[in-house]
Length: 228
Image (cartoon, rainbow, N blue to C red; front, side, top):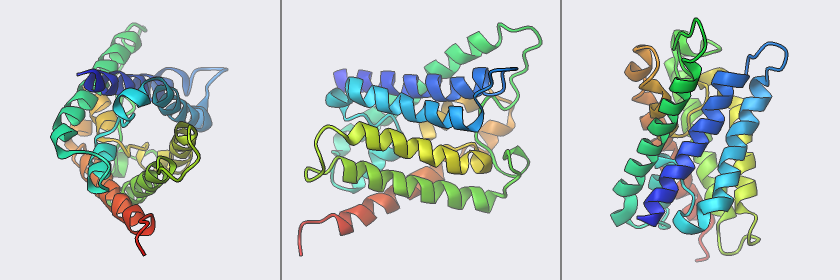
């Protein structure tokens, strides 16, 4: 239960920090943090919580990561569903907090509420195919970095830094394409509070990250194997 609680809190912080920066600070007049600030916020949220509770739960904070680590032989099947449920609930709880904060401003309209989207709901107007490819590739490399940084042969103690910076880089690349998911819990957390289209497109932001995570885990399992 402690591990599930850690995953709940870690995912809560990821959504609060990352999506919160996009909703509350990205375009604030005079001090808007923009693309670079939001990208850094997502990376810092994972980095800080990985250091804080990673030793309790492993610091997944992402259903795709949990599934990828299972495929890669790093995580038991018995914990997979409870981890995913904890992550999704933590994300939705943070989404609710953000909704309460954001709706306290006069003239509030939920709109996309930091949701991921494709077609007309992509910031850059990218097609469903482009968004699908982007999410698969980004999540695949995220898993390769996670598995490599946490490999017993890697320098000890630096994994959260590598993983946090990787997530920052992923956002710098893909925010204009998909608003960056690579995390089904993050996508679900805000879609439930956004305009109806967000839930209608949510399927892609479960399918693509999970597919990418599986590909990334298999790739690292192949290149990282100590067997010759």
